[in-house]
Amino acid sequence: MDGVSMVPILMSDSSTAVVTRENFLVEHYGEHSVDNPGCPQLHNQGMFVCHSHCECQDSWNNTYSCLRVIGQGKNYKYCQLEDLLNFVEVYDLDKDPHEFDNIVNTADQQLIAILKQKLFDLSRCSGIACKSLPLNI
Image (cartoon, helix red, strand yellow):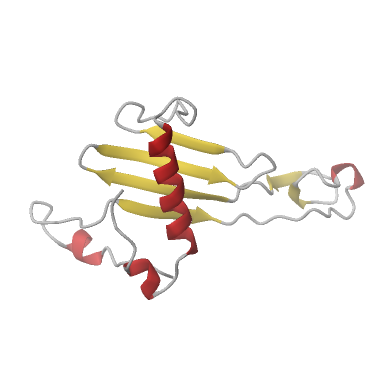
C-alpha cells in the first residue's frame, strides 16, 4: 500500500499536529461479475452475489476513486464512479457538508480539471513516485 503514515499525526497532541498534505486518495474496488449462473434474467444487469432464488446483494458498479482535498480555504471531495456512465461527483464540503449538491457542472471547470488530474496522478502512482507528486492542489 502506497502512502504516508498518519500515526505521527494521530499520536501527537492535537495542538502540535501538523498536517503536511492536503490531498488524500480514497479507492474501493467492488466485486463484480457479469455472469449470473442460475439467474438468467439478471444477465448483463451488473448484479453480483446472486443466490439460487435470484436475490442479489450488490451491484458491480460500486467501484470508485475519490480525491479528498482538505486545506486552507479548500474542502472538496471529487469522485469518479466506474459504472456504465462514468459518473463524477464533486462537493464543496464547506458549503455542502452533507453532499446534497453535486457541483461538477456548475463549479469552475479549471478547478474540476485540477481535481481530475490530481486524482489520476494519485491513483496511478506507486512507491517512491507517489512521494514525488506535488502534495497540494
